Amino acid sequence: AGRAHHHAVTLCYSTVLRSLPETVLLLPGQDEPHRAPSVDRSCMRSASLELRSDEFGMKRVVELLMKYESNTENQHESAIRMLHCCESWAKYVSVPTDIVNLTIGNIGSNYFQIMNPCATREEERAREASLQYLVAIFDSAAHTLTTKDVLMAVLGAV
Image 1 (cartoon, rainbow, N blue to C red):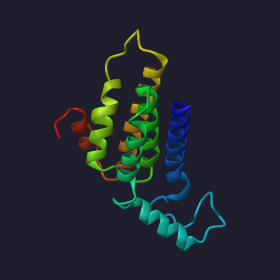
Image 2: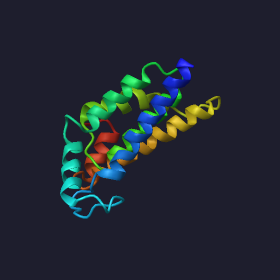
Image 3: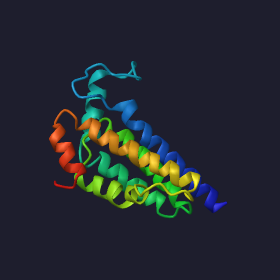
Image 4: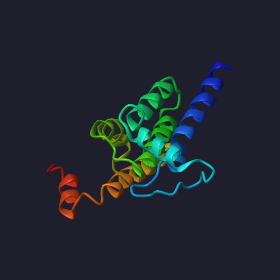
């Protein structure tokens, strides 16, 4: 019963934290709230600014997920939830370098290996989540990165 409760709580936390950016955060330059028309604009702006801060933003989300996912038995499922959540956030905020190093460097890099014919379905899903997150990071930085910057990063020259 304790394991099932922990799994349910972890799943709830990751689902809420994953949906938060799309629900609350405004895209840069966007004034009109989306998905919450009954919420005052100034409240949405304040929430958006607060969630973009270091104290309450993506760093805090990753800390919370790491805390709740630490006792999870299925590490692939845990990684998938973490990577999907980070992907959702990467679409709306700049991902701090330490978060990229933690998530892509430590968690996601396990899934960037050459295709393994013996990989389980969970490993394949984790690989897909890693790649989707990486694409979201580059997409969100597209307005500040040149093609040369991206190529240099991919080649490891940065």
